Structures are given as structure tokens and as C-alpha cells.
Image 1 (cartoon, rainbow, N blue to C red):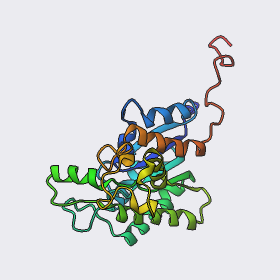
Image 2 (image 1 turned 135 degrees about the horizontal axis):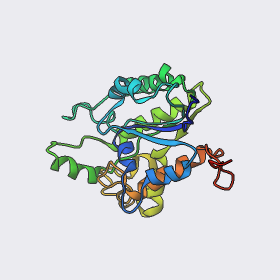
Image 3 (image 1 turned 135 degrees about the vertical axis):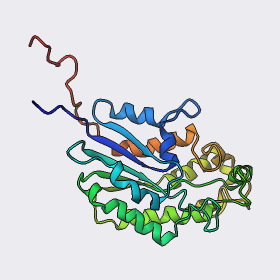
Length: 256
């Protein structure tokens, strides 16, 4: 019996930022835009796991990635760090030390289950936070203090940049979501930009950021506008080869 045709995959692996990318946010869906871009060429598979850090990710990695016999992963998007960057004494216990985070990301990139597919890896920096907005959410959730700080998250984003730049795999592509969102926030509210863009916007000291508030629904997760920035960053790196099945004008019929 001939083997059925299978679509190669665009596999999204990450935390709640990825999990929620399939949802409708303010009339916009990252997942729908990506699926349209990949239509008839790739299956988009969302393996976003809310609350997960890189230590959790390594445990489930082999269950998330299909064997090459079942499906070919052509692109793998990796986004972790928002939870790893929680403060060390956070009651959520999601913190992963920076050096361990670096090691875990590298382990994901070089894992045999990943290398078996030789995918293009879209390695994403964790997004910034808006501390004033996030503090209100944390307090409402019963946490005594902020669980995440802009300056700490920036360190984890910088670690991803370094990993991408030092990677010996030329198929590792940096998607700098952290910078893209900060730059978009600065364009939305240019009066907020002073000094170091990467550390200034969104801190308690600078006050609530109107720019980031437009991009982050709770100071952490993305709004529709935030996901629009995200998807725009990745589409140019996902090719559009010929469709798996021919167009209807060329399609065979049962009588041909």
C-alpha cells in the first residue's frame, strides 16, 4: 500500500506565550495568520505549555517532537524564558538560574530528537514585561510582590541572543521578540523613551507604560497587537514552497 503524503510541520514549542498564540486576541490571531502563510505547505503544530520553564521543557521534549518516521519537522520555534526569569524567591517556584537556563536552551537546540529532523530553528527571546501592570495581576493572584522584573527578563533575552550568535548550527535563526516589542512600544508612546530603551520602559520606577500596555494584556502575555508584532517577525523566515498537492487546475481526477 503506498505511503500517504504527509505535510512537514512548523512546530511551536514554548510556554503560555505560545499556547495562547492560537487564541483570538482583540480580533487578531497569530495562529490563523501563520496557518494561512503555511496553508497547503506545512502543518502548524502548537505545543505551548502554560507555566512551563526550560527545566519542564526538557522533560517533555521527546514527547513533543514526532519521530521522523511519522512527520518531518521543517521549522521549530522555541520560546521559553518568561517563567525561567521569575525572581528566585517567587512563590510560583518557576525560576531557573540564568546559567542553567542557557544550558537548557542549548540542550533543546542540540537534542538528538531535534537534530533527527535538522529543522530551521526559530529561537525567540522572551518578551519584556510591564511591571506596573504585572504587579496588579500578581497582587490579585495572592503574590506578595512582583514575580518578574524588566531588568531580569532582559538578561534572559540577552542570553538567547548570545546563544543564537554563538551557535555552530547555521539553521538557528534569532527572533528578537523582546527588542521588537520594546521598539514597537516606543513608537506607540515615544514620550516614554529615555536612556536605555531595553531597561527603561515598563519598570516601576518609570511608571506604567502606555506603549507596553498596548502590547501586553496583563504585563506579561501578549495582546492582539503584541502577537501581530510577533508573527511579523517570523513570517519572512518561513518559506512558501510549492503546495503538497497540486492546484485544482492541475489536480488529477478519478477518471484520469
